[in-house]
Image (tube, rainbow, N blue to C red; front, side, top):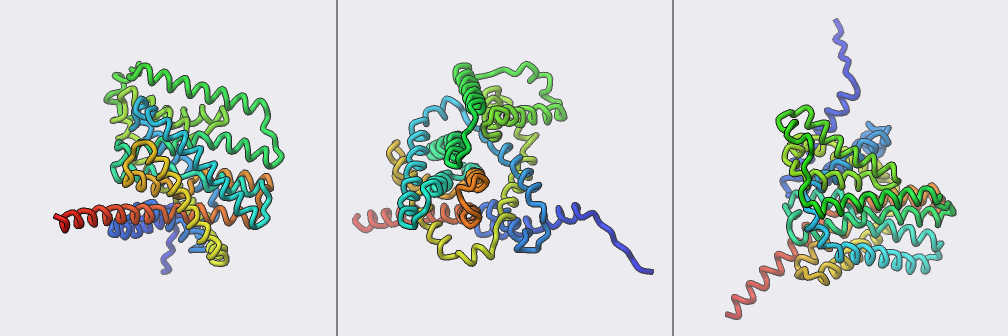
Length: 400
């Protein structure tokens, strides 16, 4: 008698992913690194250059976008709007300076290598944006969200999420595709509505939801109320041509003002962990190891340039706004990598033929690798700051 075993491939895939994340996650925990790195490595292992198990990476990518929406919603629930608005100067100056400096540097490099001006500008946009997903997760893990440096970094990250809209419009113009007047008006209306909601929350301080007492002990309805505020905000924002994650963030601010954050956190936190993991797995799936190997020197040089430039710019900006140098340097490290929204800019530029296939693949590799390196860069910076502190303490003791 021959034993025949049949199993659902979806169940098998989920089991393999869970096992890999547990193994890699336990190793990363042992060396005190965040799970984000593990998720990206698992994605790379499962992709075409690894085991080749995942062929439909687009579905995984779309599921991962839900993780970003949930992540920004949770962050919105943890932020007091009056406290956040106090950081507007560092957010505006930090974002504009990083974008301006990045574009200027790439224009200089482009001039040396005879690049088209459009290509240099787009790559400047790409390297200017930091990763909300990675840094917000690290801020939460390190319990820095409510600290001065955490608030300053968050304000810059969220301003970068907002500035993606004008950057995409500029990208369309550079590609010879004028954004329609109707779309621009729609974006402006959406922006005005978001500003109106923020002003209302700022003035009211506390919002009372009409049904909050009714669902206080009803866990099932709580799930759907939380989903409504999270994804309803994301949907509304998308309708106006704005970032879905931005709408989810505003939904989180509303929840914070309504004092309903505790039961929402208990209701949706497991979903957040799952879909954020899927998002980073989707990044790993996009890695082309053969391309990285063939262009290792060029990619390495650009990664070093990106980290040093972004780290320096953000450290100086944070120092200008009363952050001590140690905090400013740590903040610069947190903002040094290239963010996930840069994938959107690179993809748009490629479709508009501003950049060719090689540049697009180079951009994908660059973004993915900086996301993997980021936690290690931050840890290295923390150790250097701690070493300098210990060195000064030792010097003081020797002098005394």
